[in-house]
Image (cartoon, rainbow, N blue to C red; front, side, top):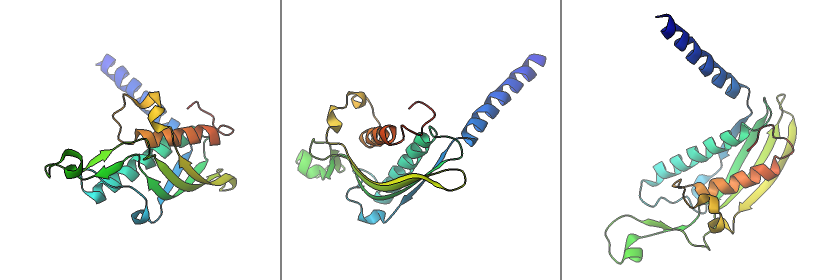
Length: 177
């Protein structure tokens, strides 16, 4: 019984540390402005609304993960105005020569990932530390050897955002990326 109590106390202590570490990290606030006008957030094989929701949620979480590298109490405010996912969606009849199956997203060198957004990094009092309008594109996305074995359907977009964050926030990050 005593051993169980010690293990439970240890688990509680470790969980409390994890929660408190995140409580003191910077945060990200992402706004998806006029997403129906974006260049390409087209679903290949699922409901379009669900695909958009899942895509935006995944990128929201990724921006939040990156923001954890910033000093505590800072806020990274992002307003996305366009998104163009890597590749292009084609009907299966065009790709496979028959009408069977779902649409397919084909990744070619010319269909690069792009994202357009503005950001403001604020301190704990809400004062602006830095801001800019950003037009990201990754013309060499297929040459990125880190992504070859990944199954993440947004791997190209995340790599592009990570590279931007590492370069743009190098002077203010407190944790390694």
